[in-house]
Image (cartoon, rainbow, N blue to C red):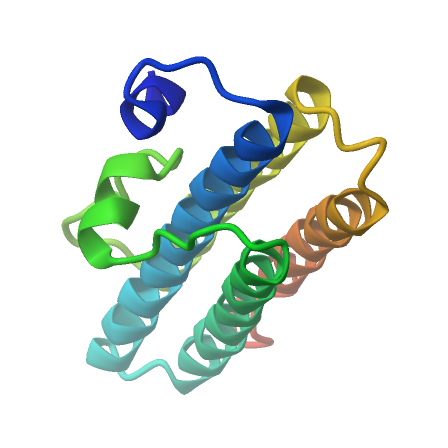
Length: 162
């Protein structure tokens, strides 16, 4: 469905298919960043400095990840689609839960979002022919490892919670 939206129903050459997958991945990563920012704002509201630091750091990692994806798209001569509207339309993440949640609950929600991003990365690896493009293959492996790093960060909750 997402591919259909971006390609307007036309059959795409493999290079364009990879570009579409990378743009979907970019949208999903930018959406993940917004989840971290939201959790950070909620932690600030609860005056929980340790979680503010934790969510801020993981938001920074998500932002760097989005920059790396965008750079890869640009360096391959493809168009980047990363406006808020495009992110909303193309993200593979479920909606972030709203309402009153404590900081550990935000950690669990964020881990679910990271897992959705990791699944998206693996779908792209499975569906696209990246074997001929080592830069894209390396990028996807790095992104998968970064998902693991973000999850591990969230598993190491601030000391006052453990």
